[in-house]
Amino acid sequence: MFEKKHHNYSYALVISELITLAHRHNFSIKKIGEERFEHIGMTYPLYRFTVNPRAPKKFCIIAGVHGYEIAGPLTIPHLFEFPKKYFNKEIAYYIYPILNPTSFDLDRRMDDDNRDLNCLNRRTLKSRNYREIQAFYNDIKKMRFDALISMHEDLDEKNFYAYVFEREKNPVYRRIVRSASRFTGVETKKSIYQSPSDGHGLVINVHDQAIEDRFFCMKQAKTSLTSETPGKLDIGLRIKINLENIKIINRSILSRRSG
Ligand SMILES: [Zn+2]
Image 1 (tube, helix red, strand yellow):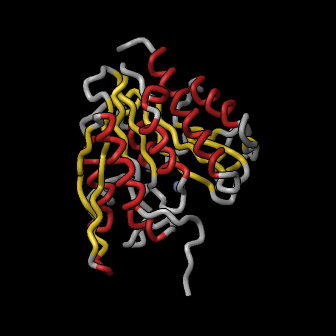
Image 2 (image 1 turned 45 degrees about the vertical axis):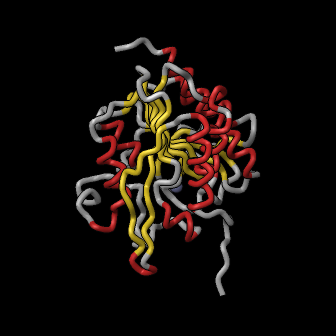
Image 3 (image 1 turned 120 degrees about the horizontal axis):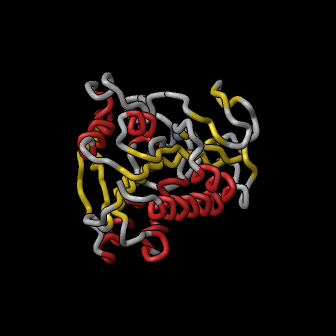
């Protein structure tokens, strides 16, 4: 028969917890669209949570693009539980906790249509197999962010790495790698999935049409990155790395002069 290999969470479980916490702390909850899992006749609502909507700076946090990479989605309840620790009043947070709910429940990378959702381009914005990406994009296509992070995982890895898109090495990326190195190793390979790496955990400027690549290229996010926590590390530490990264990005947003 079948078994879930990576986790035993469900979309309903995580989202209902987030909705409870959002009510407790007055975060706004918006249904941005839905994904219909035709094969089983089930419809999944897609959500965006917003914290401090009127704050001058803007930070977009994305998780759960690939369903079996669970540290990102499981980081969000921690943020919501301790808002004073992780959310700054000067920053509006746009949070997409599980962008790919069917893959989360199926405990795999692809959605129910067997598509990899980490692709935002003209083709996926038209295809009926990418409704999740369309709902997300329609929700924020007019927004400009000070920072955007998409939290992924590399399930085969023991070491941390990240994808960034700036030619000039923004020191925030170095701080993220240094912070992760307190909890685990940093990937030193010169090539990560055929993309050249700096040998210190960063793949720089490889345009792969991922969501964060697109937002950076369209100048919709000044700082944009994909973090890859290592799936072979304890889940508590993977979440801890993500939480620290959010704090580091907060500080970098606040230290930047406006304009
Ligand atoms: Zn991924």
